[in-house]
Image 1 (cartoon, each protein chain N blue to C red):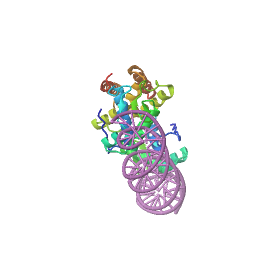
Image 2 (image 1 turned 60 degrees about the vertical axis):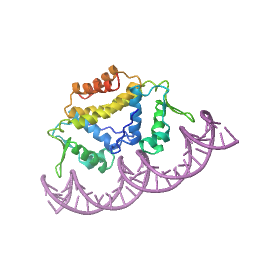
Image 3 (image 1 turned 90 degrees about the horizontal axis):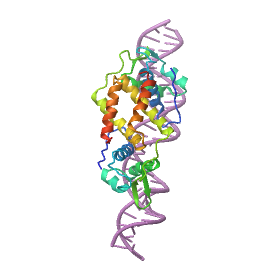
Image 4 (image 1 turned 90 degrees about the vertical axis):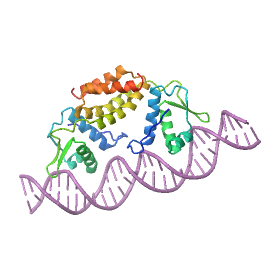
Length: 126
Length: 126
DNA sequence: ATTCTTGTTATATAATATATATAACACACA
DNA sequence: TGTGTGTTATATATATTATATAACAAGAAT
């Protein structure tokens, strides 16, 4: 699996790493039960600190995407994360709203936004 | 116009403020040319520091949402922001992608996401 | 002219977040 | 008995967020 990070980005490295892994899981390039590199291996691979990788792994574990066995390492959660609950849906709604508002202000219309969404679904293999 | 801020949120106050204003413009509750409160008035109103308001105003000016006349105050840009260019569209795409990936992992399907989008369009008066 | 209100600039301070560096620990496994 | 896991602990550096005060420049109102 490719991990592309932008060190110039305002988005923190650990966030970018989380996103890459979540996208990998959504695309099923990362399959349930699959082993991920150790914090040290991945950190060394990407050229970042092991704590930065660990922070991403820990948060993904918290969110139910990963399982971490103390000595066996990190694996994609066999059952996947919990289904979205109402709290998550509300948060997603609140996250999307300003993004869409800004797009509308910039004259991106509903049709174009749906088209962009469809492209993304496509990229994620849906 | 109502401004609702969540001081417990991880989202910075100035970001929340930007979002509220952008949403206001998208909903046309804030109309082109309309005067916004002075940095001091709004800060005092919300109970935050004037520099926090100023930061939001400055960034919104940078993004073409607002015009700031040195002594006449802050107004909603009469012409609105620039139309979305390819760079913006690419950034929006990259912002949406991990959000959608996470939603899909949590078994929110394409249909439900489109429904959520439609609800948001509705809230924004489209 | 004088006063008030603008945004603006300058300093300072504190708390938090991000990222790195090093070292050590506990424990399974070969 | 090492080796490789994640984990924990410290320390450091930098950037971000938010606040507090003060002062400045210039248009607007009186």
